[in-house]
Length: 142
Image (cartoon, rainbow, N blue to C red; front, side, top):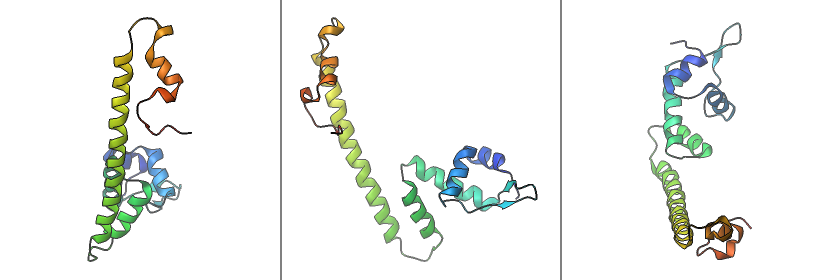
């Protein structure tokens, strides 16, 4: 297989600029080039890019994907490191879910407190203007 970057993008559903970014971030190896300096990819690139796309869809950060790719190239190793990376990611997801649940509650509270009258009397606007009126800390930067 000897495909150009546009075809790789079509086959994997990853945009060309993103493929270039992944190359620069060392997630994708530097491809072979034609005499005209056009990138050319093989089946391995399609598989690797699909792996990256799926990992990104699951929310893994670039550094974690880099680690997972390195581990996947060593199939005889125990998967404890893979599990550790996944547990770390899961902890982050659960932390964000907690933040989102609190955020949802705060938004419901703001809407419930609103008299649905005029903007000058709107509790949503008042609460947005004064973080101290919030019932929960929802990660607002200082």
